[in-house]
Length: 125
Image 1: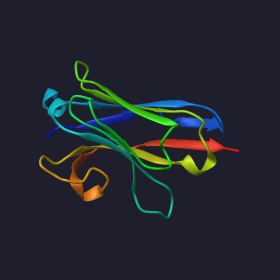
Image 2 (image 1 turned 90 degrees about the vertical axis):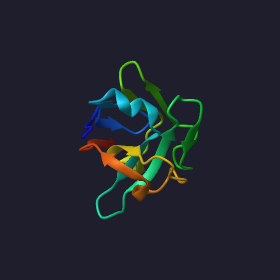
Image 3 (image 1 turned 180 degrees about the horizontal axis):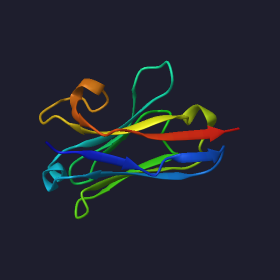
């Protein structure tokens, strides 16, 4: 079973930046769409961004558009999330996931079959 490991979280002040990484244990992940989700305390996990297997297509939640950039390096089996202009409302645990093949939607939790353990992002005002 493939494993996903997120890293790069931390505490920053509003307006700061962080770069999250999601490393996959198997090269087979390179053929999948990958996504980033986040979950704040007391809230449901929500979509942040997704990227197609070759990086040609990217998708963003409205809250992430213009501030976050998703990318991937298939040679390193790694997906990234560059987060700029962070706001306190971005505070959450961030998870990366592997989307199931032939799943039409990229922004739903149940479209993904493998998840990492998450990395905490805390933005202070």
